[in-house]
Image (tube, rainbow, N blue to C red; front, side):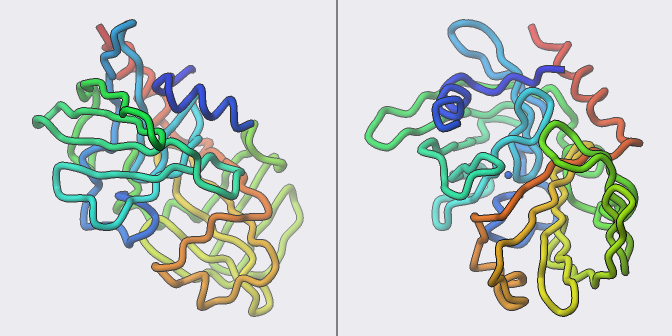
Length: 252
């Protein structure tokens, strides 16, 4: 499947080679931008797939979204972006502005340049409990078996409340809920990773570099950007990919 992202961010990402944002705890329901969208560009429609805090590209989570403080209300969110696997923000920012129950204005910004704006129409269900891209109300789903993707070094991951097993090798760990959709993994008293719900069928195992303390791990005001490695894994029982593909077929 190929879930196309909008041209400006995709082009910049190639050149450089995520609920609202991760900088704040999740709200009681997913933000309005979560879902599958048709972005109407002058050259034709493009598919846009967004979970609560990640933009998908070519079927996988690709760009983290970090909500900018002081720029948001119920109908607008401004985001900094960061490609998975990179340690700094991308030069592109994103704004989503709701213009109707099933419509929004989608804008990308590059510093000192005019924003690129396009109208978008929702193709998916807006209710968060029925949205497979939402990370709300699904905390327990992070426990269990996951399979590696092209963005990971592992073939198989299993997480329980006392153990992490990667390709048959098990380590005893403690699991600490950090926020909705994110667990902290602690080994011998030392934080070693986040396991973050990416929305859809996916999660991201984010290995820490040395020096991350428990206080830093759980602090909602200190967003960690620089990881030793970020690995995308997929729920083998997931059905969201099929649902997304079905929605994208509805584009006109």
